[in-house]
Image (cartoon, rainbow, N blue to C red):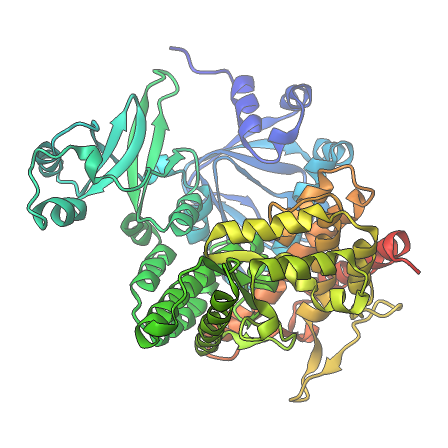
Length: 634
C-alpha cells in the first residue's frame, strides 16, 4: 500500500489540528497549497528565543517540541501531534519570549504568517481560538508549568495508555471468569455482548459476591455486574478518563479502540491505578477515600489535603473551567458523604424523631453552579416531601430542623464558612416542605417585591446534590412555569449592573484596603459576580434551566436568538480570565498553608496579566452599561 502524498498528509493534519478543523473544506484545500514541510532532529532549535521576525505558524505532524523560556529556565509547553505553536510571535509581534526545540525526531507543517493573518480576519471562530490561546499564555506567564504532565494529561490518547481487556460473555460461568483472569494475569474482565461492553468484573467482585457468600462457581458473569460499564473512545484524553471516573465514582473505564483499516473494534481497560502510575496524582483515589471516610473530621482533612494538591493540576495545564469542575466534584462528594454521616448519626441518636419522607439537600451560589473554589462559603437549603397531615408536618419540621442544623455545623468543620446572606438550611425559611419552597419560588420569580427577590437571587442556582432528585426537578419546573418574566429579568440584570467594577474612567484599578491594610479588591464580589448575575438573568430569559453553571449559561445564550448574544460572547473570555486568576491565587495560598481568600492585589501580577485584567474589567463595564439600558426598568 503506497504512502499518502504530502498534500494528502497536510490535508489530514489540518482536519485534525484545532482550530483548523473549524475551517471550511475549500479553505483547507487552498491553505495546503501555501504550506511547506520541515524536518528536525532531536535537539534542533526550531525557533530561537529573542527573534523578532515571525514568518510561520508551525503544525506538529510527528514528534515532540519543547517550548521553554531558556533565560528563566521555565518550561512553557510540550507540543505533540496534532498541535500548533508560533502564533504568539505573529499576533503579538516583538521578540519571542521562548525557544522552540525538537525533543525527538519531528516533522512540522509551516503556514506562512501572511496567510495565517488572512484566516484570522476571515474566520471569527478561528480568530477567537488564538485570542484565547494568547490570553491563556498571559494568565500563566509567571507560573512554572508541569508541561510534561500537561502533555500526558491533554495530548495523550487513551488508546496509547489502556491495557488490552480480558473479555467474557454474559453467561460465562464465574469459575471460567476466574480462570480467564488467572490465565491473563489480570484483575479485571469486561462482560461483552455483541461487541458492546455491559459491565466490569474485578477479583474483588468474585471474592465478595461468590467466595465470601459460598455461592456456586456456576453463577453467570452477568450476575456479578451491578452497574453498566462506562466506555470512552480511544481517541479521548487521559483527562476525560479522570473526569469520568470522578463523575461516576468508579475505578475503571472501558476504552473502545477501533482499527481504521480493518474496521474491527477492540476493548481496553484503564484503571485509577493506571492514572496514578502515569501522572503521580490521582483525584479519583481521593474520591475513593472520601467514600470510605467514617467521620466529618476525616472529610475535613481530605478536603484540606486535596486543596493543596490542586495547584499541580493547574501546572499541568488544566484550564479554569475544568479545574472548577474538579473542585466542585470533590466538594460534591465530600458533602454527600458528610450528609450521609450526619443523617446516619442523627437516626442512631434520635430514633424516635425520624420521619420517613423523601428529602433533599440543595446547594446554592457557587456550589449550585458547580463553580466551587478553595475559599468556599456555604449557601444551602433542605426540601422534603409534603407531609400527609398536620401531625406529620410538625414531626417533620422538628426532625429536618435537627438534621439541617447538624449538617450546617458539619459543613463548618470541613471549612465551608457560613454565608452572610443567611441562606442556610439551619434557618427555618430554608428548611421547608416542597409546597412551601414552590410558594417561595413563585413569589421570587414574579418579582413583585424587588428587594426580596434580589436577596434570594442565588436560589436560582439551586442544585440538589443529595437525596430525592424528584424534589429538585419539581423546583426547576416551578421556575420554568413563571419564566421568562420581564420584571424578574430587570431585577436580576440590575443586580449585576449596580456592582462597582474596580476600573476608573482613566483605565486605572480602583483599589481598597482590607482589614490588614493590604491594597486590592474582592475579585469575586467586584469582578466575577456581575458576570454570574448577567449569565443567570439571560439564561432565565431564554428558559435555559438545564445547568446553572455560568459557562454553560453563557454558551446557551450565545447559541440562542437572544438580543444579548453579543454580550454573552464577550463575557465568556472575561469569565475565563477572572476565574483563572481567582483560582490561581487561592491555590497558591493553599499550597503554602495560607488561608485562601477572594482578595486580589493587581500589583502582584505580571505587567501583561495586569493589562489583561484591565481589559477584562473594561469588558464587564461595557456589558453592564449595555444590559442595563436594555433590561432595567426605570
